[in-house]
Image (cartoon, rainbow, N blue to C red; front, side, top):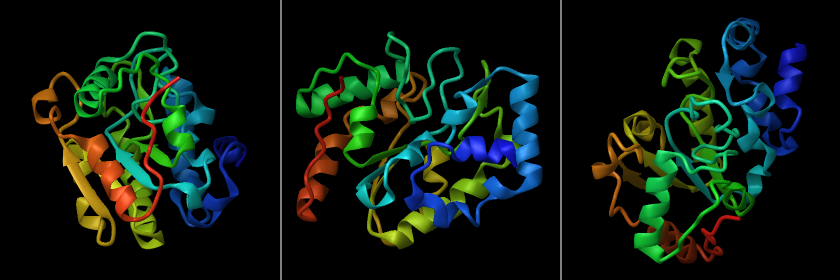
Length: 220
């Protein structure tokens, strides 16, 4: 179970209840994940796979659900759409363009940690990927982790769920209590279905409706 402990090293204790019954403790799943990382170059770094869980569950207000991590070396950092590279990835560039059109904010840093620190859970439907091959870790059955996670979050409280792309919207049927905002994936391949969605102003309007503080969408 050394690899499981490595995965959980930076996870906040508030997530332990969910994780205790998850496939993270399934020996077959962990062995397959280890084999994938040992046989190929995969992203994000192993210890960052559950990075979105390093923030307290009770401080989350918004869940943004995407597809899978960036599949280029030195980019994925464990938070969906965030990047540790200096160059802004194409999908994030479209997110920032939409943000600028929506709220007039012009971000230049691809590090989205400031969003996560304010309660935005940046989650993908697949939490790992082989270099150069989107959706390549579908066979690992990340859906057996994400499906119960979405159900757990939906039961926990009425979050704002933002579903970007078909992979994310496949999980809409498991959301019964939360607020839903839908859009295309921000990838250049589907940007025409993403742009002009006014996601960020809609999120903040819903937060204010719940008497919660809005998100400062600037990055640093």
